[in-house]
Length: 301
Image (cartoon, rainbow, N blue to C red; front, side, top):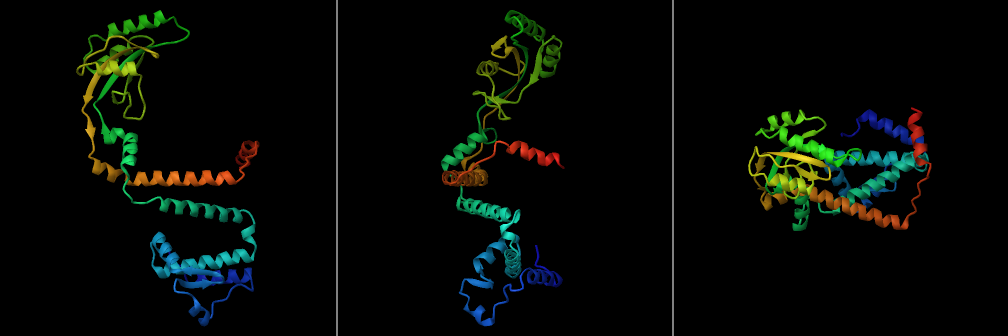
């Protein structure tokens, strides 16, 4: 963003004068000289410090002079709003409160240690979260077909269909053949699953039944088919597609990769803590009719 041009400044000045004829005038040279060393400008009662100018310059990626001009503009407009009483009216009053809240959250974020490398404990927790990409054990990829249990069906019938399924796929030694033969059996589900490790965790963040996982890992090499596997979901037949070797990113590289996410986690925890402490001394009450009242806002559009 760049400072206003000359016509824009003239319009801003006119707005300010119309809003309050007794608005703040430009400080006299004597008053400017009285500003302390940290202050670079004063607009009415508002003192603009060099630290604030530097922060705005960094945030807006502009020169200090441009940042100072932007701050002066903001201060003039804020004074105009106060003179017109806008700061006490909605929605302006709420926007002011919201801006204060966001500013507090940003300061908490900064205090949380942006750019600081994660601790060993943070690396451990984040590695667990992203285990598949950072540190995983051997995994397997399988396809399976299942005769699903149903409370409306005799378990013996469900099992019999599973036995039929097992017989139908015995000649298969690859994924495509297995899936084609299984789909020819009536009332079974056939699925290709994402890879998973021995504790059941998968590449997509899900998890699988321990009995199913154990039977999958028991298959010695790709193309092998399991016997009928009984789980709470039904009777499965499993074909091993491939075994994937373990993978681990070196700790130093892991720490570097996780720095940004560790900071965001720290900041979120700090904000949550501040909110929890604030709620202890603040009364928050939501009307039971809030949902219906807010829904009507969208119905009016």
